[in-house]
Structure formats: C-alpha cells, structure tokens
Image (spheres, rainbow, N blue to C red):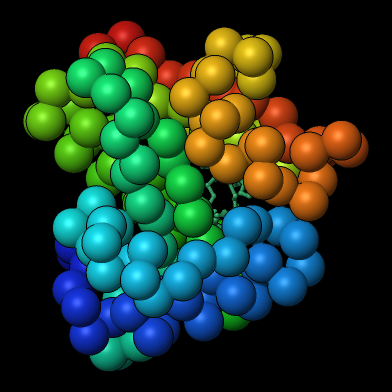
Amino acid sequence: MLRPAIISDADSIVSLIETFAEKNLMLPITHDFLFEHISNYQIAEKDGKIIGCVFLRVYNGTLAEVRSLAVDPQYQGQGIGKALVEQLKKVAREIGLKKLFALTVTPLFFKHLGFVETDKESFPEKIWLDCDKCQKRDKCDEIAFVYEIGSS
Ligand SMILES: CC(C)(COP(=O)(O)OP(=O)(O)OC[C@H]1O[C@@H](n2cnc3c(N)ncnc32)[C@H](O)[C@@H]1OP(=O)(O)O)[C@@H](O)C(=O)NCCC(=O)NCCS
C-alpha cells in the first residue's frame, strides 16, 4: 500500500534511508529535515512495516527532485520503487509542476520509468543546495535524469 507519510513514520523512514546512506548510495536525512518536509514524502507499507519511501523536493514553480527513493532490500524487484515514482509523478502533476529530475546511481531504473538522461549542470538549484556540501562533489558518480510532466 502506498500512502503519504505521517509524523509517526519518521523513525522508520530515517532508518531505511540510513541503510543506503551508510553505503554512500544516498544522502542521509535528519529527523528535523523529515518533520519539516513530511507532507512531501510518500511511503510504501506492508503488514504495518515501512518498506519504501520517496520525497518530492520542490525547488520552484516548475521543478522538483525525486529524492530519498529507497526500497527495503528484502522487497526490491517487486515493483515498489516503480509504484513510488509513479505516485510522485501523479502528485507532481496534480500540484502543477512541470519537470522532475533525479540524480542517481541506478540509471536503468529511471530510464525504465520514462526519465531521460541529461547534464547535472541543468539543475543549478541542486548544485547550490546539496552538491556543494557533498563528500562526493569532486568525484560524483551520479547521473542526472529528467522527466517532463505531461509528456506521457
Ligand atoms: C532503485 C530502487 C529504488 C528500485 O526499487 P525496486 O522496487 O527494486 O524496483 P522495481 O521493482 O519497482 O523496478 C521497476 C523496474 O526497474 C527495473 N530496475 C529496478 N532496479 C534496477 C536497477 N538497479 N537496474 C536496472 N533496472 C532496474 C526493474 O527491472 C523493473 O523493470 P520492469 O518494470 O520492466 O519490470 C531500489 O533498488 C533501491 O532502493 N536501491 C537502493 C537505493 C537507491 O539506489 N535509490 C535510488 C537513489 S536515486
């Protein structure tokens, strides 16, 4: 089941993301950040357990990022990541955004979902907010993808 996140999901979301942040696959998040942005998180839940999450980070009147996408390793390969991103596309469309982007180390996943590879420099908003502070900034292995809302 997919649903918007609520405050009591915070510990589970932080630990799910931490699993991947420890391996340098994702940026970690804090509880404070999560509380501030809780209404822009979607989660996947099974039998009361949070098994996936994703965050719509809105930058301006047209652009948002698909961020903090994670599926519990035990549940990967079952369509949950795809469902979370499709849900985020739907929310983005409903609130009037025009474009989504993602920086990722899993490019084939985003290609499957209709995202198109692009240059990171197309998203200066991201570069000031996160990349400048990132440990990997001089050896970034992430690939930028964009999805035009309304193109499908
Ligand atoms: C990337 C991730 C979110 C995918 O979630 P998932 O639930 O395993 O993916 P799904 O089962 O929904 O896969 C959807 C499609 O993408 C494909 N796919 C999934 N992961 C893939 C990968 N790493 N490489 C290539 N294709 C992939 C699947 O084969 C599937 O194709 P299909 O629709 O033709 O069957 C998950 O593997 C994950 O949490 N990874 C670690 C954290 C991470 O890298 N997050 C992304 C940061 S931007």
